[in-house]
Length: 131
Image (cartoon, rainbow, N blue to C red; front, side):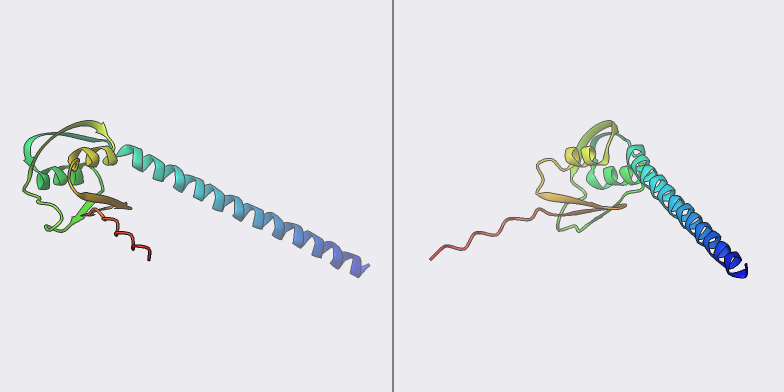
């Protein structure tokens, strides 16, 4: 009789453990889903409004930093931040604004989280001649 009782308790314990593990897995999936939604919302929230006539690139980038969580990282050898530009945007994404702002300039933009790196455009290496 006692062995049947132990077997019953053992099978109940396994079922309880399985239920607890499933519940923990469900919670992990819920948190992953919430994080994904928040990341997507954060990107769509950053709508940028600009209206500048003959303003420095530095002041335009500063305005973008004030409207968003983005931080611009660049070297003065890459861009002249005192160069004057005109730009007007309404509810634009960071990508659209930067495309407009740096159009015709030999720079490449790399967005990594909150950081926006402005670097020289990579020039392809010439191919080695075949012998």
